View 1 (cartoon, rainbow, N blue to C red):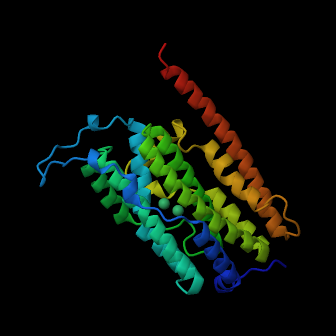
View 2: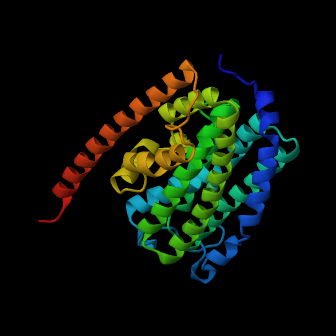
View 3: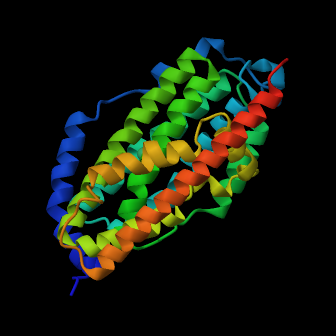
Length: 311
Ligand SMILES: [Fe+2]
Ligand SMILES: [Fe+2]
């Protein structure tokens, strides 16, 4: 019979792992300052109370899709209060778990601060539209797909932090603005450390309760969605971002799912129960389907690009 641990048992079992991971994280995470990444002297007043100039599209040379990606990435960071609520209620705020929840929140808070400062100083986006989007997005709030489920949440955030890292990195490149790329690379580094923290915790969970963990991984991989889904015009923006290669199915499968699954040795684990085996088989079938979808998308994108290329 597979053992299924309750949330409380699982929290307790993982307690010492959190202590260790927190310690490791604090040693490797380097302090950094958002203000050092922003070219303040390039900024100027906007219209309204300051009597400056209204934003126009020609204020920035950044492409339309890079602008969309910046907005999606920033709004995703902006929604931090909802994420904090989710992980604080799932992990609790006691001892090491609580310490991590607060530390992680503080680090994440820096991301939106730095990005907004940069984007406004460089007039990359319409500040009025941005603020209205932020209000709308945050007013809707956000709940994790498997809200409140500890094991599922650990699997989800492992993938999600890595996905965010990929998205920030590629958005930085697409802006063709070296300073912006610098900033987004710095943020991506934070996301990577967050991924490592959660990935290691989930790894320990796989050792403690492998069948349960396997089912969670399957659930999460099958239903994975980025937390930006509620952003106004998200679907269109996500398609544009996929076409530009900022975040597409190929990257999702090969650069986000694959390395984490490999680290967990999901396909090498031995001694699973029938339930665990069934979940693993379904996971492997799902990845095959994803591969086919990625290939199909790449074909379509190639055709689209060929059609749009100047003759
Ligand atoms: Fe972040
Ligand atoms: Fe993060």
